[in-house]
Amino acid sequence: MLVLAALVLLILAALGVGMLTTAYGVRHRAILLKNEAAAMLAAEAGYEQAIFWMTQQKDVLSALQKQIEGTSGTLSFADSSCNYEISLFKFIGKAHKGRPVFQVKSVGHSGVFSRTVDVYVIQAIPGWAMGMCRVASGGTSSYPVNFADGEIIDMPIHINKLSSSIDPTDLRDIYISGEPSFLERVAMGESKYRAGGGDKPGDGDSRDYDDLISLGLFNDGILFDQPDCRITDEEAVDMKLERFEASTKEQFKFEPEGTALLATTSYTTNLSATQLEFFVDNGIGKVRITNNCTVLGYKRTNGNTTWDYKVTPGTSATQFETYHIYAYHVRGEAPQTFKLEQTYVTQSYGGVESEPGGQIYVDGNIVIGGHNAAHNGDQVIKGTIAVVATDNIWIADNLQVSDYDSLGNYWPRGADGMPDVEHNPNAIGLIAKGVVKVIDPGMSEYESGYSEFDHDGSSYTDGGDNYYPGRVPDEYISGSLGYIYCPVAHPEPSGETYERYLSDPTVVEAAVTVGGGGWGAENVARYYYYKYYGGRQQDPTTTPSWPTKKQDNLILRGAITESMRGVVGLIGLDGYLKQYYLDDRLLEGILPGDIWLQGKYVPTPAGWHDYRQ
Image (cartoon, rainbow, N blue to C red; front, side):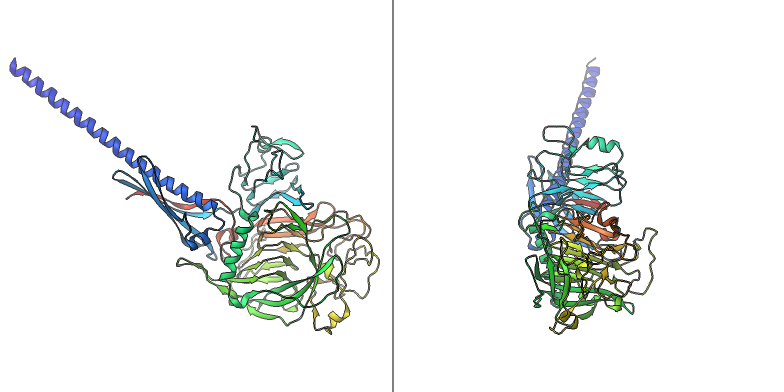
């Protein structure tokens, strides 16, 4: 019996030791798993902190260059810690590598464990970003712009959250008339809900967000509480411009000083500008540059409604002012012609280089367009270039990219007219601290005499509401004063040299960034039925008889970032009908430098890696 008892005790002891060992092992394993999980969570916390820091920066590349506080850091928790670092990894793109990829590396520690989160992120880019979906209608007033019934918007959209001073009633910041169709994602800076709870209704529209979603308007969904685009942040825009200026060749930095003394009145003034003409000569992309031009600017002051507003500097796009639109310009010096590749520079940040791309920087205004036979009137880009102005960019002609690459290969367009996404390397970016607008070419016409209102819209009366000095004195035609009139756009087919118009459709293929207002067209009539208000110059080959006003088509193939909406046309009245198409190449970094102002950063495809150390 004693032997049996001893054997039982031995077995029980062995079982007890085994159970204790198992329990210890399980506990130890649980501690290890807890430590490893804590290390992983700490590493992810470091990543989130790094991304949050990036969203707060006005310009991440500038912040990394200056190594300001936040480019690296440490976080401590009760049972873990992490250290993280943000760096520029490389530039990417299809036809041209110009889009920055940032690396966020965060290492979490807990006990003996270390886990690493290593992520490559890029700036999220919509096709059309706007500070607000409204147009200025006065010094402090703005007017909602509807996405209209039947419109198809085939590009991603982002709309910033409106300030409480503009939207005190907490309504929707997107304005809908009827049932437009959004084919790609829509991102809103505002919350889906009102402060007191419940979905937000629209301005003059009882439908709330749930109602709109139920109609199937947002094919790819709608996101809320998204970081604002920094296009309304004047300091952020300035930082972009400063980086472009610093990296541009001295030869292609201009500070125009127009010295002509054009006759002015209370509603006109003399402005300075640099004129750019893009064309292809024997297969080579070129730019003709005329510096120190004098522009006659016109501002409507007789009380009639105008849509020609820009943001008042220093007001974060909450106050607005009318500005002097383009009437005509003269030059006092001969233009110079350069190969586009002569403007190319390579941007470098911490040893990471972009591919070469063209840059032209103008501290002032830019006029793009001309009438020289070398480019048959239209502006054609062969190469990649970013054009930057500290004031306005006036587009005075069709602006299109070539379908040939640098080796002479032809890349046909798609059925929708878009440049070949995979192979076409040609692109232009237009970046202005002021506005980017299509001019009214009728303002720049010259005639020996003005008649009463011409019903085809190609002439302007000497009196009445539409009078402005579009007439150029003979001495500027002859150059007897030392200055030469520079007509832009196209001469009327009848052969009247100084009757000018833009073609229908007018085509602009560019990435447009507007820091001081909106993208649009100048001199768009609101009350077209005033006898003496002809509105914009129309294509004279198709304009119907008075009082009908034909609306030409404005085709934009590119991307838009604007601090507020700009007026392109008024439905059924005057101006343009818009047709906007997203050029996917522009989202892939085809342009030199970092032109984007979004506050959101997302991992690249297959860009997330986490592992043990």
